[in-house]
Image (cartoon, rainbow, N blue to C red; front, top):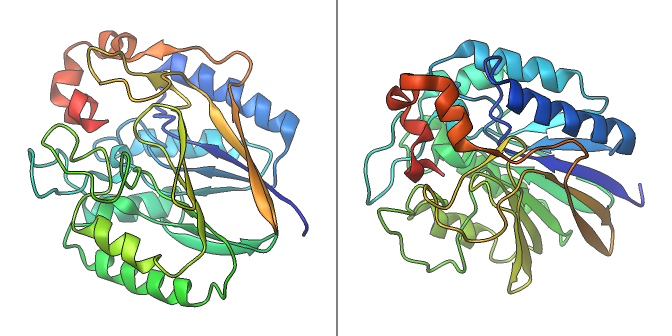
Length: 291
């Protein structure tokens, strides 16, 4: 295969009680139906609130099953819970093995690897990092084995949370500690790729579209497929809009195209909170610090 076309979607937050989010996903689905990439990767927050609603996870999977191409997934904090961090409040809800298993049962594998067009593609569950769950160590062992077999091929890594804001040594703060892969797992992850040709890290989570290069690695933040978060609730780092990202991988490089599907609407989080009424007060995963 001389070229591999991949579409990244993220943060769809699907649940049957949110018609606007469903409509945005349907617009995205029509775009994918027209474009027909080789693979769709969803980089997490597939469901609106998986830890408290199995129905959200099942509903989200049903909508993805209707896509005309194969999909791979990695979980987000709205799917399985969030990472513990060294500073800042404890996550609510924290990542749990039961929620990870629910994701695997309904959605699919939460970490994976494959090769195409001369590239190695890796998907990681970043939410278990710093959790102390048995799978955290298992995944790092699996990653070490996968990295050892790249044999000089370029690597594309898919994770839910961006690894960092501007550089590996960015300080963690209480306000941003849950936005990026937390320390010390971040340092360990970066070290594991130190001698690998890591060309791309594709992530989501922040609901902002961003594209920058640190040293030889391009970092692409996919926007949410579902909604944006206003500046009163979240600081503005990059572009706040809904959309998706398209990639073309060839043995000697790759191209990135930032896309907004026809018919997608920039729903603001306030619309969702209004729909939920008092429910959002019991849903910490919607609070400002979770994105």
